Length: 244
Image (cartoon, rainbow, N blue to C red; front, side, top):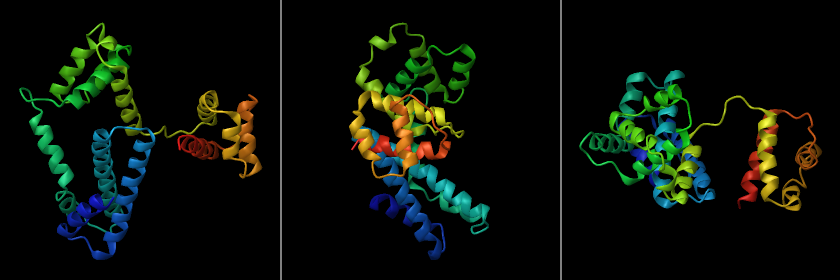
């Protein structure tokens, strides 16, 4: 957290952002680092995957913060562009992208991720696969296509490696915007298959009756009327608690 907030504070100073705005921006950056790193550690991701994951989210969050300041007319667009141009993360990403042109060497990590993605989407229909391929640059799309054409791909890659890649992809993908109580019932059903009833009920024993009843209803295979947003919070709390 200290390292990333330091780098971003330098970007803000060089970008000429007013001192009164810097503290709030850096707090949001620090929160992003904490949340993403926490989730990655809970999912037991290896260190070499956590660092680029945090970099990705810090970059995205920083751009969103600057865009929000512009939308509120707190920062004009030219000033926002100037701040973003100072980003060391963007510079590093650009250098890496330039290095991965045809004839260059693609990193082993990226190749493994493309192979894992190929395993995931190989059963999709042709139109959907082509849509996914269009999101990648040419060398990446070519590698992904090669893996899609391998009939025995699943036997050539260590399952533990693909599992780590899938976990990272899952973190990067946004949660569905439309909340559904049924979706959280399904999540809870998966949790009770791998954890004892006493341990899950113990997590919510001091909560309000509505919350305890929702959790108990999953074990009893009955549904109760509860807002999807509340179900989401309960489910997230239990998922985090059982992983500690």
